[in-house]
Length: 142
Image (tube, rainbow, N blue to C red; front, side, top):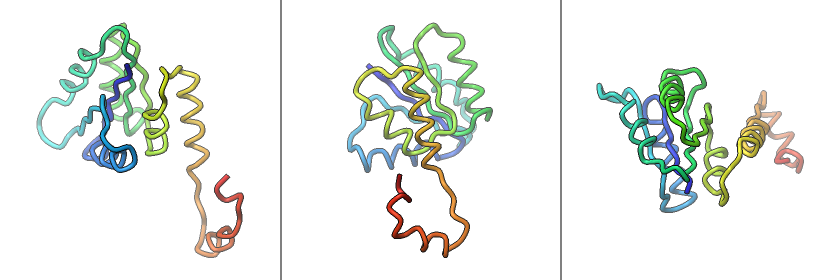
């Protein structure tokens, strides 16, 4: 079984979870960690997530900022374990959706592919004219 933890500074993780529910309905096996919203030790939630993983489970943890304090704490805690856990830092909604809708166990290579595909979807346009020029361009969404 796959189990997920979405961890962020503030309420980003909770907001992402709410968006996931909008797309996917009821979601099982997803925990949320919103760090620094109070004085509690958020590492306890990471330890609880790790303890809940059985030997045949696959854990996937999403953190908001690579190298940020939440990511550092997650990385330190999972390094103490021999359980199968992957961390995806800098998550976005397309990454969450694709990983959570995968039916089989995901490999490191598959996760890297998912992350790469989401990077390609992050684009910028420089002006309203730029957006209007691409409105009829079918390649805009490719």
